Length: 92
Image (cartoon, rainbow, N blue to C red; front, side, top):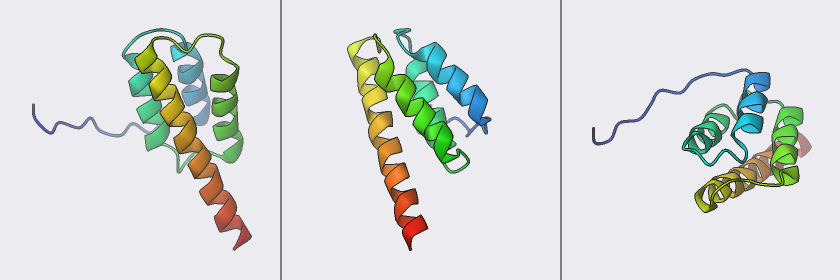
């Protein structure tokens, strides 16, 4: 199916935190799905939740395979940018 894109699933903050914690270190395709779900729900996440997700990734002893580590690193960078954008908007 060329060009197939799964629909965005709106998920609560706590479920996303649970999913991130479950996926860290699992060495499975679920890591990409979890990271994508966090990105798709970023507008709804409060700053506290974003920081919690980032902290969970930072303190993890094992992030999984090399591709999993790449997903987590990209998510961290994305969330850092999101926090920076929020800070900029709140200052204006």
